[in-house]
Image (cartoon, rainbow, N blue to C red):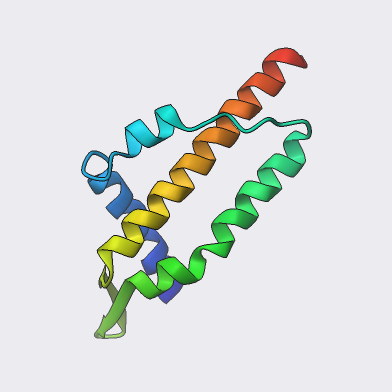
Length: 105
């Protein structure tokens, strides 16, 4: 229950901070990551996201009210840095996947 609360909170925070954290610019300017195997690219991206779970967990605190988790920002700088990194990688792989499928279908 606590992990889901953190995850949902992170997604809402990224949506709410999209402009403040320049995530559109980061995604737009992310360098394309060349993809030669789409399955491996998706697995690598998922693994990369998983590697940053501890960073996100430590930056999002949780307190409990009546047995319900209530997440809050504990370290906004770390959240921002991690979100920017993950958006850049996601955009780079997305560009690479688009190119791969355009050239291989």
